[in-house]
Image (cartoon, rainbow, N blue to C red):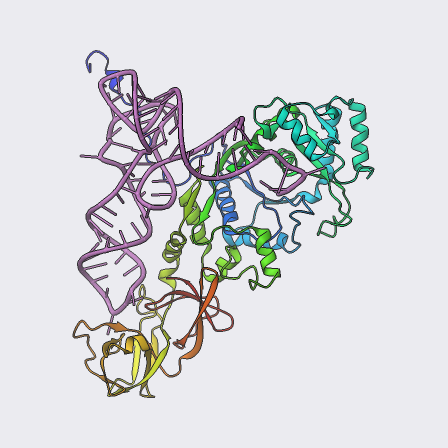
Length: 491
RNA sequence: GCUCGUGUGGUGUAGCCCGGCCCAUCAUUUCGGAUUUUCAUUCCGACGACCCGGGUUCGAAUCCCGGCCCGAGCACCA
């Protein structure tokens, strides 16, 4: 065989095992345009981070453009939150370490969407449908044209004017894209592109928009038109939007445009969190169940940041999950593990003594020096005076009777006092953390499931500013809050 | 119901398009061990997987057929 046809034995060179994100199809260096398009009905959540991280990473890889687009075209069901426009931009910068290259606000661009609707109607691939939603559902299932479809283009143009001038009221009419009621996929059959919203009772929260428009595009239409206007080359989004791609592709064909390359990811559930929706969180915050968007029980970016999760950890987390269409459920420990890697070397070590018991230290040293950064033992050592002759240890540790005060001395508990023994470590007795009389009394907050547990104790004196992620020895990582309390980051 | 999509160790992920180098990669978890005056970090080791059934082939995680599971869309929400 080798002699007869050696070329048959020559294997196609197998690609190296891929690490990280795959390359983009048809990507040209410097010309890739991506977008991340949240609804600004609240600040960003954990799940949003995926869209930002993945799209941002590709923009960076190809030296392309990342657009942050606010899809704020619903004033009734999911009304935007005024603060969110600013907040989301800040969160974007926090997460990616740089701002988006371009910011687009859909509600500023309603006239452009109207123009395209006009074109669509005049050219006969869009029409104004006055059927009720229920009636149209029947037509969709039966694959029958609705009566509006046979109305002339002139009349549709007139109807369109009546939508714009307020003759029609919300619910009376929608603009549909003619895709064919014989589409195999029911979702694609003459899908709705624009509808009426009562913006007098439900004005858009941005004052410059307010009640200016009554005719508003739906997501599939707005997004399709905007992607074209912005020159988006690649769309990477959740697979729940696969049918949107198909709908939009049909629209692009009508307009004679080429649809961007698309990639999808599946649903991600975090086992510890279950389901949170932005609207539900908003309601619970307003109802007082949570203290705010950054309540440590909430899966928002601000809550994670406040808790001490670094943006680098979040980026690494999403990059590791990459882009598969599988629906997955990940444990929070996976994110924590990334955070530990980011934070450990720079987290100062401090002692936090829970449920402290104060004990005399008999014949012990009168000063102690402990390491603050194990990675750099010489840096800013922790010096403490023991002049009071007392130390604080956790009552649970004290129960053992014989142990070693970390970096200090062996002790034995007799008659309510710790009797100092060897300064050097001599035996295998357990090592416990401890602190001094001048340790401040404080509380460690631990978010667990839907409650915040409070653990009181004494924190070793320190000079670290609020916001520092520290490692509480033998307990875990925590962040120093403005009010002097501690918030557990993770173990 | 119709349409679409996904099924690799406990959890994620690579490999699948173009069959052999795959007794299947990497990470995490769990368990063991080493270092360490933290139950942290670091290091070493171990356990552990191709949804099921047929078929094609010398050879199938990879191709074909059938089945099953799970998820999503079918909103005048995003």
